[in-house]
Image (cartoon, rainbow, N blue to C red; front, side, top):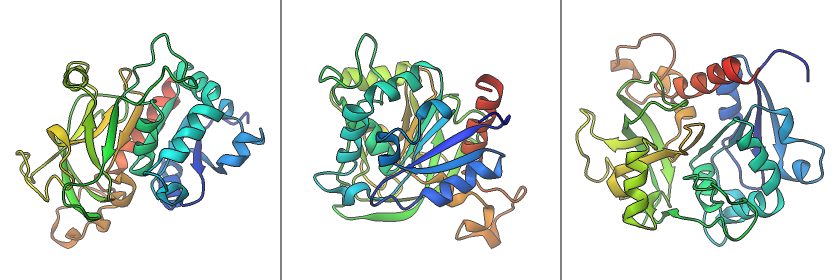
Length: 271
């Protein structure tokens, strides 16, 4: 792979169903995208070292048996731990959307408290979770998000964006109040649910009951992002259910900038 393009790996497994839409979003901004079943990485036919961005897309990996994202998280940590940790230490980017966010937190990759630890050993434990929605049902609706911080992935986004959610286990909780305070102090909260005007939401504006209305977080570097809403589903403005009443500023929707940010960062820092 010698071409001067950002190379993106979309990781798939049984139950993944948002890979094509997410891949399209990266391709739109000029990336070379490869879709690979995780077994290809296990057997060495695909190497993480050949890519700049690792993506764990939405869906229901392994049918969300046991609990959402747990099986794929265990595979990443226990079977690919050294490769994933090297990928992170090389300064590359990771994004997990919906089920991918669940995988990242259950693997201990987010919120990224890994200093002095190795990803594939028991000392790297899960410190936050995404659990069952307070409504006790699958939430499939549009929400508003307030951008927080200025990480790689969210830099330059509008203060408030509209994107859809589709999950049954999206309630973000931390193991301790201290960890939650750390996320705030370290500017690791990427998105929070809000009203259309940016105010504190009630249900269904916060569709799951997440603490502090958190919808997405990063690690301390801002290079690893996990978020429950689906930016790839509002890539073009006309994907919004009210698009005919919106004053569109170009063809792109609110979620497109997330992918553009990742590509721009990789072009500047990883090529």
